[in-house]
Length: 437
Image 1 (cartoon, helix red, strand yellow):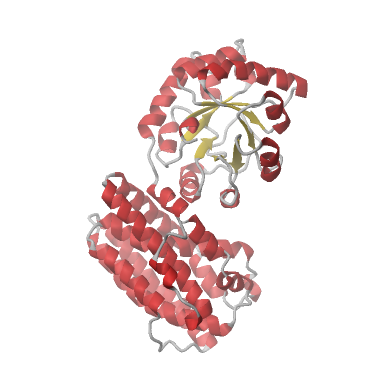
Image 2: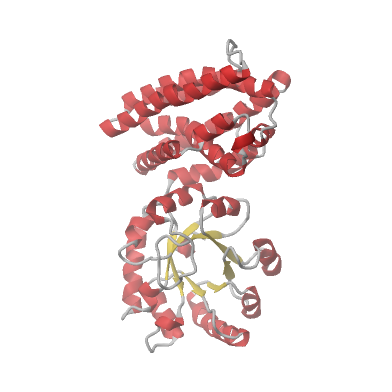
């Protein structure tokens, strides 16, 4: 699927400039277009079917998939390769039931909430839309921009295609976010020479395509993250019903973990080669010592929590794993080992903020600490850093990065699991990733 998304032509007959749609599509295919979406809003169903049949006949010899925009009935009528639906179109589960398992279904996502919801669906790809404002489609949400696109790509468990404002001036930066392709309208259809325009765009796409290691790691950890969000500790923390004793036990263990975390951040700072990166990790350590510690002290006093406790096996083993990653003296591996603590906490904090009633939640201080904008920006800086480090890493290093990341992510789950169940169950599942990946 990813290869089919590289240069995705979306049709617009208002841009043909006297040429036929078949001429434009054939010329674009000669230039390297990899998939075509037929989009029509103002014609009858019978006209749409006739046009779709014509386009299908044009594309079939070229082995280029035909995707129908919105209209599942038209896709069924002409046996198209699939459909692309938006947030306000036919619900995905109904479209899949009608089309079957073998057809392509793409889904537009207009914000991060849409994207996270799409992660729970088995769509074939997501269209991140719009990246930039565009005149060819005006009924759209606020643009993602490059930073928003980068975040969406990393969090998606599906292949991604960028939609909105794609042209030769934007394609380079867009592809460097790690997305799998671009969806183009006017940059090809309105071009004097669609073949040349498509060829130029294909060259930009292919020469700037880059894998986001962070996205790959997040995809592999999707089951772990879903298990975290569905855990009773997180659900009850969000609605404020979590038993105080369970929260107190969690804070006691987190006090131990954080003391090690601060030291680990300073060790990472020493490993960094640039002054900016050194300062970033020093700031993580200092903000943790100030912000998180202040939050902990407030909660310790609020709930009269006893922090004179021994480290649980989960806390001990998790800290040992991170120290082991840092001890490799490989920056990429060390970053991978500490990343889940930052990234997952941030995503959990953001998730809870969307649903929690902070005014009546006894744990609101904890919730706001991990979902705030400053913490989010810091996490995104680390994600940029680790993606950059992964570009030049060899296969063995990438494999170890993924292993440490997934193991640490599983310990994140186990940490909350222990917070809820303490010593009443076994946590031997942390010894193997087999059932989680």
